[in-house]
Amino acid sequence: MILGAISCNYSNKLITEDALFSYISSLLTQASSMGEDEELISLLDHIDDNHNLASEGIYGNIKDVIEKTLHELKKFDEYIDLLQDYS
Image (cartoon, rainbow, N blue to C red):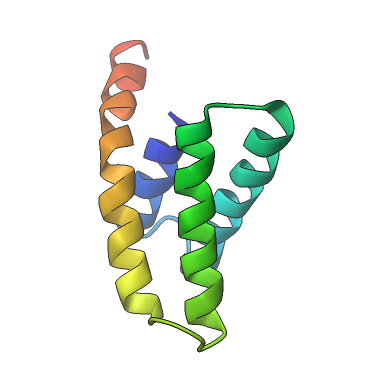
């Protein structure tokens, strides 16, 4: 649910690019320390690595990383609808 909310908030311009990747990095740290789902950890790690490499000018560019990140996070949007149903 959190990833869906983060994606939605970024798409609606409620959070900045820096906040988007800060949240993802924080979630990666938390998920790793709690031994969460390996697939989720892998996704967050991949997004975090791509952002860091693009930010440092080593590989890729930020625009592409943002597009790929939002595409990856789309699968979590369905949880936003569930949250709204319970509100």
